[in-house]
Image 1: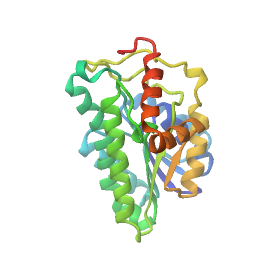
Image 2: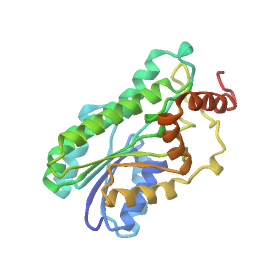
Image 3: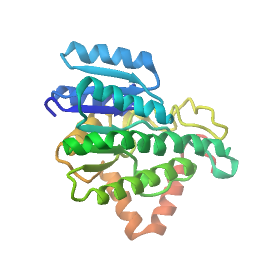
Length: 267
């Protein structure tokens, strides 16, 4: 990571913020992007205290123009890109029968199209540097979750996009990686959209019992350095992926039962 140019979207909080700290500790020059500009400025000041060279760019990843601007500003300042981490994401929680379809569109715009837009404009520079394009996805990209139809759809789409991209560049030196965290402590569940698109506001999980964003970031950065193709985090995540392949009906029943126990579950 020493002197590598690393772009991180969704960097204003949670895993994105933790990733910014982690790569900066390893000597990277960091470009942090998110919609909340004040949060970015605060993070930039904190990172600069440790001597990290930082560029913050207010970016709405649902905007193709914003994503192009992010890449253009990065190249204008640093001259290249070594690693793009597509971390920006949003979740949702509602039964499909009750769901306003604009919620699925919103989730797809952030999770899928945000990844596509940033990757599209970064890829010429990543090819020059034999760099890495990374998508922070979810276990939900391997198996669906009830009341998360839009979220699961977006993550399955990201997996398909990234896997196809990896095969296209089998001989170019481009590193393509998908990271699938399990439940990790963050604001994603508080900000998850409900049936009408309004934020959930509270999390249905005991956040303190989940893996911290800092621990997740450490594992992710190690895997990026090793240029792994995929990373499924936690033993629970690995078990779920295995069960989906071997005992799918059992996993369906188990998943339904667990999600039904959530506070204010729609089931």
